Amino acid sequence: MITKIFQYEIFNDNMESLLRSINNFEKVHIISGNPEVLSNGLQNNILFDNFTSKNAIIIPDGISTVICSKIVGQPVSEKIAGIELMDSLVKKCESENQGIYLLGATKETVDMCNINLRTKYRKLNILGSHDGYFEIDNCEEILQEIEKVSPKILFVAMGCPRQELFIAKYMDRLPCSVFMGVGGSFDIIAGNLKRAPKWMISIGLEWLYRVAKEPFRIKRLSSIPKFILMVIKDKYKRK
Ligand code: UDP
Image (cartoon, rainbow, N blue to C red; front, top):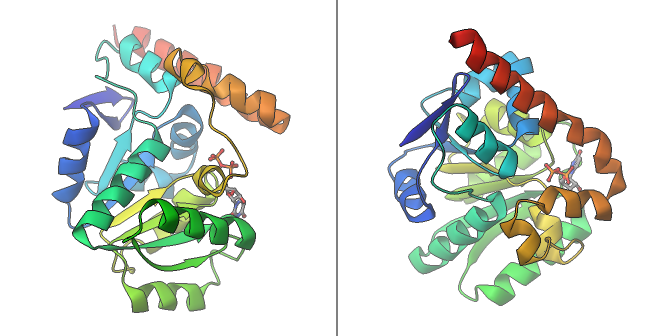
């Protein structure tokens, strides 16, 4: 099931069904569909083509996308947080003995993330990791390493739009089946950052918690009302 917001097809079902859908792809880019990422897609042709290609799944990550789905009259059945999907995918990889690769964040963070994932998922096959501070157009060594170890899933934590641009540029070349940009998830898994308390997440205030913890995010919040307004305008234009 799909919710259409602009030309984007937003996944509209529960986590179980999402995991099944991902399995059906030979190669897929999972995009955390929040206003910042989706707005970036509208402003950049490479991202737009990638986000709207047949090899993309956009998940409704965040309350704003849930609100937009209601505005267009096709409410999503549930919000799907990128970090929760990452956890489910990691768990599945452990049980199926499939490998993953962690790309992004600082070296200390990605190393700590690696350790914490191995502690939580004892049999998890982490085939390699690398920090996210390199030139996207000049990273042959990293690409060759990923090719060599050939993970089933590549998690990329380099923030938006850097991680999406990396995936769009290299997903055809790299032998992974699943590519997912996971933003600050390595920081959370490493223990540098905490997720908002459950009650805040459940009433859609995770963004407020993040701004309180990292005030520099306040500027980036402007993409939320702008995106919602664009969706409202688009709806009335179509009427
Ligand atoms: N990051 C990176 N390379 C860069 C810039 C950022 O690897 O050139 C990492 C940063 O260390 C952090 C992650 O990207 O771990 C996520 O950044 P941010 O919190 O901005 O992403 P968001 O969750 O907001 O998409």
